[in-house]
Length: 62
Image 1 (cartoon, helix red, strand yellow):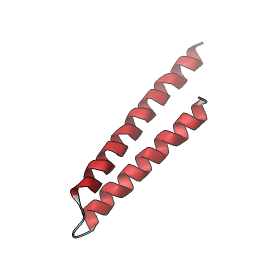
Image 2: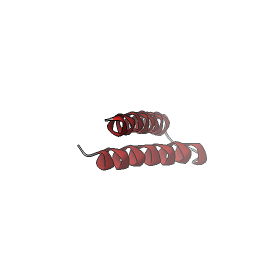
Image 3: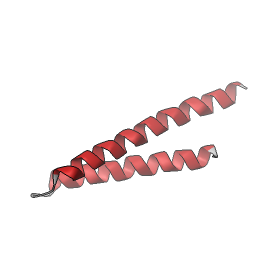
């Protein structure tokens, strides 16, 4: 996959995860699965961003 596609995908996962987590916090009777899903998506987004940074650094060294 191209690096740009990976970066956009990671950013979308992070964005959606944060939106879901904040929605869980703001809504009064929100289910617990929203918090869990938001946390998992945010974690996947952060991991993806870190891996993309590492990959771009490796491509600059070559």
